[in-house]
Image (cartoon, rainbow, N blue to C red):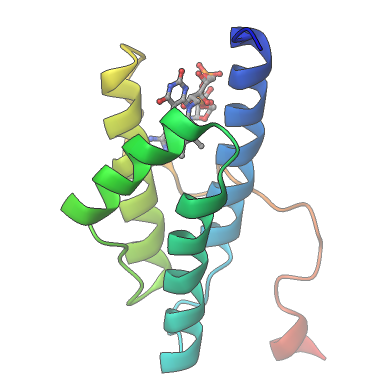
Length: 117
Ligand code: FAD
């Protein structure tokens, strides 16, 4: 089947949004298990992402820049960095990773559930 760049880009946007929002809510001080879960997720993701060429490139990035999982900041900074690597390859604007703070809001309204309950 022919490539459809519109659909491929739409999938990319939705996926990045999900991934950045996910790491924005990763624990500030993750347990060993939480760290392992994120790492495993990222490697499984790189095997299953439906755009085969994208996934192959992404696996190359993972071997060069292994996922950082020691804290929310580390994970969000790492993902921003690898997304920028993809941006660079696709000749897209580079995102300022210092401004990632509140950019990815889950909208779920339950961020402090554990603390506040
Ligand atoms: P996107 O890159 O989708 O970004 C969406 C929004 O996120 C931007 O508008 C901006 O607000 C924000 N953003 C941009 N950079 C960052 C950053 N570094 N950190 C945080 N937020 C940021 N497409 C291909 O054609 N070839 C590929 O090989 C390819 N590989 C991909 C690999 C992966 C793992 C993923 C998830 C997608 C891949 N894509 C690939 C899709 C591509 O990255 C884009 O998603 C798609 O081209 C749409 O681009 P966009 O300009 O809408 O912005």
